[in-house]
Length: 548
Image (cartoon, rainbow, N blue to C red; front, side, top):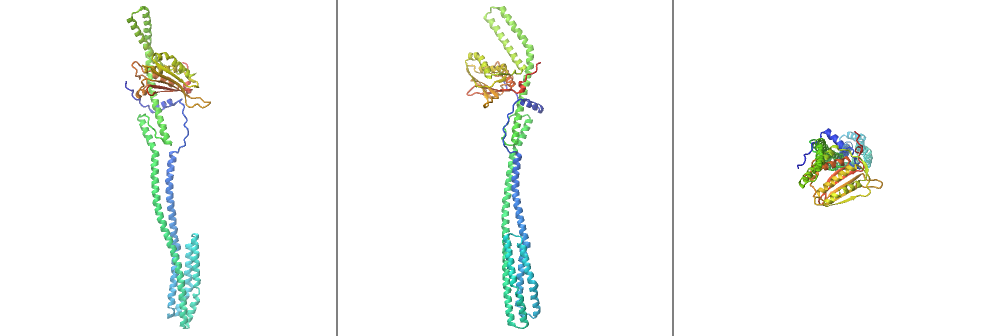
C-alpha cells in the first residue's frame, strides 16, 4: 500500500495548543548550567579591541602632536630668540672691532668716543641681557639636563660679559692718548682692545655654535620622531584595519546563525516541519536555534498526534455504527449457527466444513468489532502498584503454548530489584500479547523470542529508577525503514489479512501510561520493540476520570 500523505501544518493557535498539550505532564530534564559567553559580550569585546587599537593610535598621535607643538613652541620662544640674541652679540663685537680698527685715523675722535661710550653703557649690556633672557626662556622649564645646560650657558655668558668690563677703562685711556697725540700708546691700547674684542667674539661664537648644535639636535630628534610616528601610524592603521576586518568577520560568524534561524522560521511558516540539524553555538543564538528546532519537532509531533487523534475519532464514530449495525446481526448469526448445529446433529464432512467456515468468519468479524470498540472507548488506565516483571512473565507464560506450537524458543530476562510501577495490568498485558503475537507471525518457520525488562538510568544508593524498559525482540525477517516509519498508523499493515489496528491500539495504551514505544532493527535480522514506561506517571494521567 502507498504511504500516507504528510499531515497539513497546524495553524498558529492550534499548533500552540497542541504543543502545550504534547508537552504537558512530561518532566523536563533540567539542563546543567554551562558557562558561556553571550553574543553581546563577544561583539562588545570585539569592538573594545578595535576601540583599544584605535585609542592607542590616536593616543600616540596626540602625544607626537603635543611633542611637536612643544618643540615648535620651544623653537619659536626659546632657541630662535637665543640664536638671534647671540648673533646680535657677535655682530656687536664685530662692529666694535671694526670701529676700533679705524679709531686712530678718525677725523673727529669726539664723535667716535661718544659711540664707544654709548655702546659700553647701553648696547653691550642690552645684548647680554637679551642673551640671558633667551637662555631663561629656552632652558627654564625643560628637563633637568637641559636646565643644567642652560645654567652653564648663562654662566659662560656672564663670564664673557665680565671679561669685557675692562674695555671701559681701556677706551678712556685710548681716547686720552689720542687727545694727547701719543700715537704709540694709542696703537697699543687699540690692539689690546681689538684682541679682547676678538676673544669675546670667539667665545660668543662658541656659545652660538653650541646653541645651534642643540637646535640641530632638536630638529634631528623631531625628524626621527616624525619618521617613527609615520611608521608607527602606518603599522597602527594597518593593525586597526586588520582588527576591524577580523572583528567584522567574527561578528558576521556570530550573527550568521541568526539568519539561519530566520530562514528556518520562514520555512516553518510555509509548512516545512522537517527536522534540521542545528549548528552548535555556545551562545544565546545557538540556544535559540536549538529551542526553535525543539519547538518545531514538538509541533510536528503534536501535528501527527492530532492527525492520529482525528483518525481515531473517525474510527470511534465508525466503530459505534459498526457496533449498532453489525454486532447484533453477528450475535444472531452465532446463535442461529449453534441452533443449526443442534438440529443437524450428526453431520457429514462437507456440511461440517461449511458450518465451521461460517462460524470462523463470524468470530473474526466479532474480534474486528471488538478492536474497533477498543479504539473508540479509549478508556483511561486504572493505575495500581504492580510488579512489572511479574506482569511480563505471566503474559509470556500465557502465550507459551502458541509459541511452542510454532517452534519458537522464548527467553525472559528480568533485571533484579526493579521498583514497583503504577500501571493497568490488563492493558499492559494486552500490549505484551499483541507484540508477542506479531513476533510469532514474523517467525513463521520458527525462531527465537527475547523479552527483557530493565530499569533505565543509574540507580544510586537510596534512589530508584524513574523509568522502566520492556523489550520484545524476534529473529524474523525484519522490516525496512519505510515500514517502520508508518508502523503505528491506524490501518497500516503488511499482513494479508491484517487490519492495521493492533499496533495503533498498543501505542495508545503505552502513551496513556505516559510512556513511549519505538521499533528498531535487530542485528543480524529481526525486529525489536522497545517500551519505556514511567514508574510514576504524570499526575494528570493518574487521576481517575469522574464517574458518569
